[in-house]
Length: 432
Length: 119
Image 1 (cartoon, rainbow over the protein chains, first blue to last red):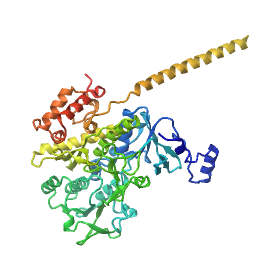
Image 2 (cartoon, chains in turn blue, yellow):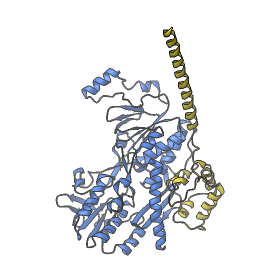
Image 3 (tube, chains in turn brown, blue):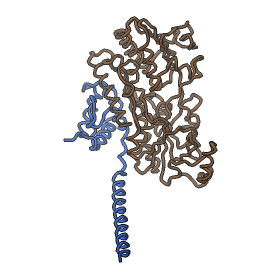
Image 4 (cartoon, rainbow over the protein chains, first blue to last red):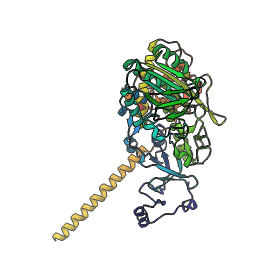
């Protein structure tokens, strides 16, 4: 709980001075019409993606007396899982989009602003309209920011010509339009970063589904995947399927064969590697990433750009009373996936409910399952079970792993159907 | 006279308003009290299940499991773990749990009658 002396650290302006401040356009600390200085315990969640929205809802169920405020700039969330199917023309973008009405109905306060600062000592979040939210505990789920300083030539303006489409939405639609507009016989080039990044199998699912589109609609075209590493998630399954389905159409170039993109020239649509250069008719550049900006502002990101956490409570290693979940967190063996974010969110919500009641949270095992589509009726998966060990989330030995190698096609068809079922289930649990 | 009558009417009206408001408040308070019973916290691993297994009313191709008898859930998990029951992914997941953890998960899922199939 906050103490009186902590409360006294922030200037509390009168209503008149607030109005004067707003009128003058000054960015001083102002009390705003959101829940400020509540008597009851309040948890603030920054970010309304799979991690943040899941955590808010789970906390509502586990701790009904706790006030919850979700800070999310957007009014509609566009989900990344299955957005590769949108890029391949197999799905509409609006099937990826979800709102926050269900969370509102459960009494979760939704504030459509951006969080721009956190004072961990005073336990306060500052919003872009100057408002201050006080918290007993804060959950930071900002997802990823793309590092536009990582590949020379690939800055934010370059994304208009060479989309990343690694945050779903307009970029997804842009890449789809570019593929549609491309002549048959064109060359598509993808650039894939080194680890860690959001959705480890995602680039290879995307390559597969773009190849599916080219094979069915523009069969004289070619897809080159330039990769900054030599190994990737579910690699044996992907490579076997590519040989079977997309031979001669999809070429994967690993690091040791010149896969690392060192420079990009947007004007000539050229990706330069250590071994040469590739001119693209359509280029999809997935740049290196780090935790979303508020993580650094809150002091919960370390020098890697990601956020170290306690594996049982997801509390930051760097700041007390702040929990970090989802893609932004360093979760050991757990990948940066929507499923992982949702699992972590429920475990973190249970831990917060216990901490607020003065109880000691119990360590929990967590599960992840990631599906990838290689073609519309060809699905594969990777699963893992994790537990806190030596301060990290470690794999439970003997559990998890990728889909088996030698199975009948019906197995792949079943997993493609399970993938779709999973998306319906998880989005209903989080937003429905 | 008319004035007095109207005063008395007005008093009645305000009494009615207060009474109704109090009743409404009591209803709200009691419903809030009903809503505010916290859900039982999931045992180790159980929070992850609902990522794929939806409540019965909305389940897709992945079967609903909340509200099934605990014995049935535990037996299925143990069969998956031993590769004695065919599956796509559950055999890989079940291998991550001990007998004791499986029984605790099964008991917790069985208690989720609000998500069970309606008879």
